Length: 119
Length: 107
Image (spheres, each protein chain N blue to C red):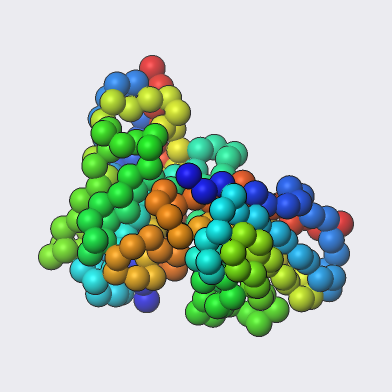
């Protein structure tokens, strides 16, 4: 059974930093693309970043501030977030892609970790 | 950036009725479209990928169609558990984008 478990969310001041983690199990972690998708309170879904065999990709709103990475031996995905803004407040989902590279549909999702940026 | 426009914003139907949800892309995306269902307090669930392929475990009452710029998600006979928000997503070009969602509510 595929499982994705996010952690690391919390309350952070504007301009601060936070690192999210996503522990994965139940599939061959290194061979699939992984992504972060966020959802602001009461709003729709917004893709944030992906990492796959073809490298990393970022949305314009986070480019230069967020860094996605993965530790394949630990089956863990990360999102390092810096220079956080109020508009980054959201539930952050970890999502597994159907394929190893390129942009993907997301066939499994975690339950999300909440990031709140406020003073 | 490819913009996906979903319609209607809200759809009010009764169990047993047929639901037709639309997603239009601002430029051609071939068949690189997925549909998701999201219930309150839950993560999204993949229903359809590559426009018309049901994901694992998705009931046959869900079907997807379309290519190019116009896509449709059809639920042939609504079950009580189908009332939720539905999103489309394109993977044709970076950045990946989602539609704004269609809320399917009980009439």
